[in-house]
Amino acid sequence: MPTPSTETSSAPFSFEIETRLRDSSSPSTEQIQANGGQFQGRTGTIHTPHGNIQTPAFIPVATQAVVKAVLPESLADEGAQAMLANAYHLFLQPGDDILDAAGGLGKFMNWPGPTFTDSGGFQVMSQGSGLGKVIDMSTVEEPLGDDDIAKGQERMANVDDDGVWFRSYINGDLHRFTPEISMQIQHNLGADIMFAFDELTTLHNSRGYQEEALERTRLWALRCIAEHQRLTEERSHKPYQALFGVIQGAQYEDLRRKACRDLATMGFDGFGIGGALEKQQLGTIVRWCTEELPESTPKHLLGISEPDDIFTAIDNGVDTFDCVSPTRVARSSAVYSPTGRFNLTNARFARDFTPISDTCPCYTCAHYTRAYLRHLFKAKERNAATLASIHNERFILDIVSGARDAINTGNYFEYRDKTLRNYYQMQ
Ligand SMILES: [Zn+2]
Image (cartoon, rainbow, N blue to C red; front, top):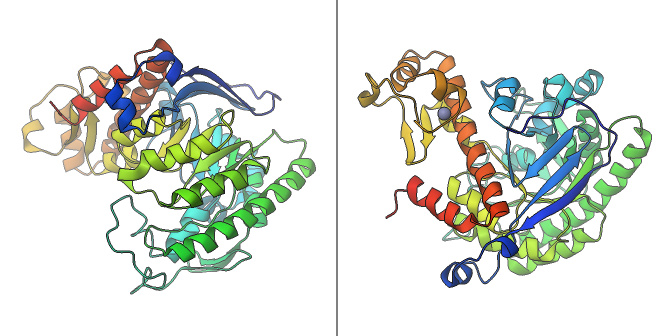
């Protein structure tokens, strides 16, 4: 089981590719055709000052420097290798200066392993374009006008060429984010991997607006790099922080490829693939990006949701990805199992004294029954969320470490198809 390093090394950030999917496995002709003739998947190791990440890796989300309801010690025991926190939330509360004084995000939250922070762009912008309601992965049939997106709601953020004004979700105070401010906040937060400040658009924005936003994101990426270099020099006594550029461009192939070519020359340590991603097109969009970006750089997919998305990401060359679903669904009593997702509050579990999953090696399944967990949810006891979250995080972590092993041993496609067939109960 991988555990975070407890030592801080002075080694700079680096990434090594180990096994390439196309070298280790032979997909069938149908599999190759279904994927446009390409598989970019690989295994590797990301080296950071706070330890290594064996990829592909699932990165649990610790939005406010905590994975909701779960201790970092528990996540380490279940095999988590790194955590991703949100710059926007930590800037508003408790303040990035406090994390800096504490010795950085990892130290503040008692997580000795690698950490990521996002730039705050997603949260700031999702408030501007309708409080996140339209930033989903569902199919878009009719694009809305750019001004219709926040219809019926007070706009919480306004984008201009220099940055974004936004209102705090906590108390309504007005704040300003620019590429420079995002870099200053993320340097204070001290994560090993940071993301450049980008403008998020939605699938509902017009083509014209996507082009404008992409150009803004390109100019902001240059400003992020400049400020990052200045801060790295100024804070040379701190562990090195890597900066990933973020690829936008929604569902447009030419825009995605252009964004990749533009950002590839700027000197980023890696890349995040972000923005509006239609679920049905996830693999195709990710592949445009991984084909275009330098192969030797790590790629992170920002925010996915379901087990099939995980394999789509891995197939197409994503090395790390984050996802809030395991804890979010756990808090509403839904748990993953090899044969699909189910709800623990169902009456049929009242006297079911078996674990959530017989084959799951997690702490919850080793010690607790479905009947007890059902009781905790019904009684609204907080340990319900803790125990269900531990199980769900382990389930996703194990799927991804299984995929890594399968790429290394040359049976990835068999593993992927069997896992998905069982999970979605396809015959
Ligand atoms: Zn379990």
